[in-house]
Amino acid sequence: MHDLHDSITKTAMKVFSISYLRPFQLHIICNILERGRKPNLLAMLPTGAGKSLCFMLPAVLLDGLTVIIYPLLSLMRDQENRFRKFGIPCHVLMGGMDWTKKDEIFQDLMQKRVRILITNMEMLSQEAILSRLRSMRISLLVLDEAHTVISWGRTFRPVYNELGRISGLLNPERIIAFTATSDENTTCALKREVLGENALVVYGGLDRPNIIYHRLSPVFPILDIIRILTPPERRPAIVFCMSRTLTEKLSKRLSGHFRTRYYHAGMDKEYRLETEKAFLDDDEGVMFCTCAYGMGVDKKDLRTVIHYSLPESASDYLQESGRIGRDGRESHAYAFLGNSYRPGPLEEIFSQDTCIRENLIRAMGQTMDSSCEGCDVCDGTHNRPFGIELVRKALRIPYLRRRNDLIRLLRRDPSFHTLDEYEIGKGIDRLMERGFIRKRFGRLKWINNYSI
Image 1 (cartoon, helix red, strand yellow):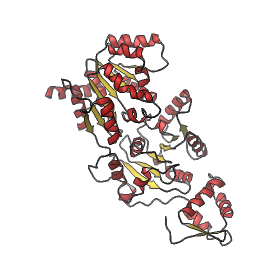
Image 2: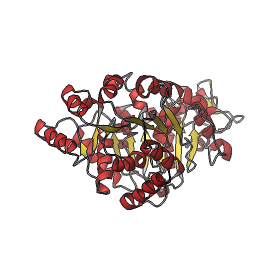
Image 3: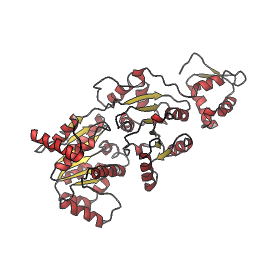
Image 4: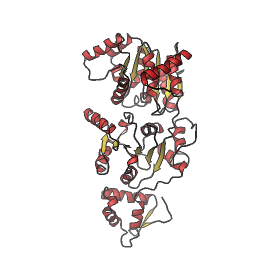
């Protein structure tokens, strides 16, 4: 074991210029490199924890082939760039390649000139590809973002349902799966369908102490985005939206305030690539996106994430909010409540009067190892939605109490110039639904007994 540790630390320094390995990194790498047939492994590590090194370093030391499976082309490209950065030869096998190029790749793999292959399930499911790989010794099969094997296999990527069969045909010496978010049901499904019931599960902890969690029940959501992101230290930022149309709409509407872009799966491939690159190089930009950008981003200086609409599960929320603060600096995650098409379980998690961080981690079937480093509940922060005082002030004017008159007055205020009359009216309706404004004899009145 001492010799193995020595080999690992020397390789980390010589190849990756890393002088210190985190305990969980050393544990996982040792487990992969120890001699003898061992159970497969599932590693649940928070985003930004250095999981790539856990399979990059073994890939350098193993004699056989390492095959790395990613769900997104952007992740495949990112991983290729990481290997190239350290001078480690690798090949990427993806759709659109002609057979001449594929033959060149397989010749390099068979001759062991290259021992690392990055690909996706769509390629592995092709019998011609599968038959070529079956003739090679595969030391390590890596599944990154492993939770997608279950969630996507049940929905829009049915090819993932073939992973168990394909991995059996490839017969790798070990299967190592990595994810930042896997609840109990997903973990059980991964064991049952791919890894085996005796698979070892390593928990690196879901808590990201440098992320501060906030909640807000917006009245005029666009104005709250402006207020949150106006300080330069809160950018670059991501705003997650539920629909493709909304990403484009908000990006256009707020382009006068920030350097905005939008991103969703319906965009042309080349345009997506251009957008990704432009945002990666932008130190003040704001990206409005669907969950299609959640796993593809590897931008370490992101400071803020806003969920304009909440995702379906704590797993998705932690995955998406985990994109920020990967450089270790303090970052902020804002959840907009009551702003989704359909209220889900996350609304309840964020609405409770107990620690937001602890509730999110408990929803994943884990417990916190330490006290909360920052959330609105533990900090006693009360985020007041923007625009409340302006509405309240307008309702003090005796003759201006009818809804349409109030909308027209607010529309003339510089703070509301970004909104149209419909959006202002919707905000007024929200205040009425929450009991802050009462309508009597066709006239509106603020209820002073309520506070926000």
